[in-house]
Image (tube, rainbow over all chains, first blue to last red; front, top):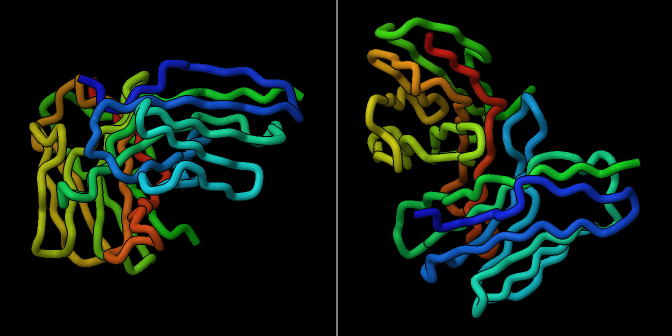
Length: 114
Length: 117
């Protein structure tokens, strides 16, 4: 059973507009959430994270929102740029488990159209 | 120079062959991980190591083994490769202390594309 779900395999957005990538999770023990970005032929790179004690974290054009009651988080990119075109993975961690394992979603491919 | 390097970057092999994928890091991190990525399945954890003497199985360890030769080196072996091990393999590292807030961010290598015929 998938514990981290990214239900949209792909998303297309016009340059300059907002991109919203969504992620749902089922494990209530997850307490840290991360977003990774992956370009073709490269490894994933860390983008932004949020602790479960917060509901928002912002870093430049990237903002992550966490709704614990809905077990939902989203990544907002404003304004979107063509260089943002990549696959975005949502990941979650249960720190209490002691394993430091990250559970990844399947990814959403974002295409920003010039 | 890249902080996390993987060799080889691409490998084609035959069923039954033994294969070793290598990972080296210059970040000075204690923790290292091996993941595989299959199309449409995201990344799944194969093995992880907290230090040279600590090796742990991940979600999908069957058919794989690992060796932590030094703090900076973590290799993944397929003793007898089979076609369903065809995938993209990533090594990752993280720091013991994690970042402020404890996100324990993992840093990934560029990946090894393995094809088993």
